[in-house]
Image (cartoon, rainbow, N blue to C red; front, side, top):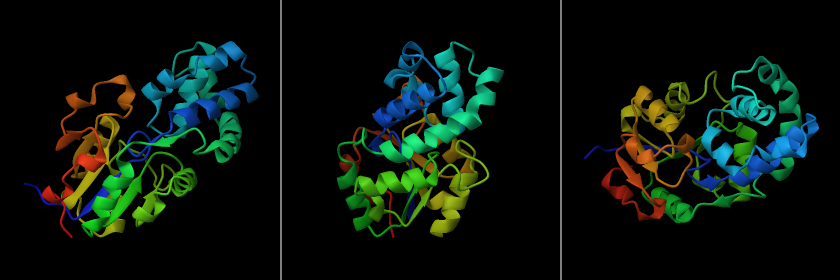
Amino acid sequence: MPEFHAAIIDLDGTMVDTLGDFVVVLQHTLADMGCHAIEQARVDRDFVAHVVGKGTDDLLRRSLAHAWGLPDDAPEAVAAVPEAWAHYKQHYERHNGQHADVFPGVPEGLQRLRALGVPLACLTNKPTAFAEQLLAAKGLRGHFAHVFGGDAFERKKPDPLPLLKTCEALGVAPSHTLMVGDSSNDAQAARAAGCEVLLVTYGYNHGHDITEVPALAHVARLDTVDWSRWLRP
């Protein structure tokens, strides 16, 4: 059995179901950008579940293109991202966590992890301030020694840099750090950084079956995991 001395845990789709937040905030943002109700309605839970996870700029670009009926990389959508971000930020600060729910078993799973005495970090592509705000609102912030968002480093997941930097902050080598996530994005970043990955089966993963992504384990709830099998102080 591999042995790990720290864990890095993703946020959206792994600890908290934030699709409701994203839909509300994106639809407000699209309204500010002049989109009609029909265009706003195109950005629904199913759409967001397929595209979320690669950072705010990517989410805004793809949402604008989808609302306007354009390809994902349409120049009009790319050019509109800075303006959309200004609106998005204001709406997200107001709605963050209001339409989101902690997944069943997450608080208990985190408590069991902490009881083992291993350091934990939250690593997400959500902006750091939003991640801190959400974790605090849901009573989860106290579990983590560090919280790093998509703006904390020069690159985002699936690039390995954020995991390497987070391992450095935890003081544990990547080969002894377990990544817990919900998508191929997390798995790709972990493998590239030299970390092992455990994947939850209830997340988003861009609309694909997460069990097809190789992992140490695929789990339905964090409170059903026997963390002591792998984690040691």
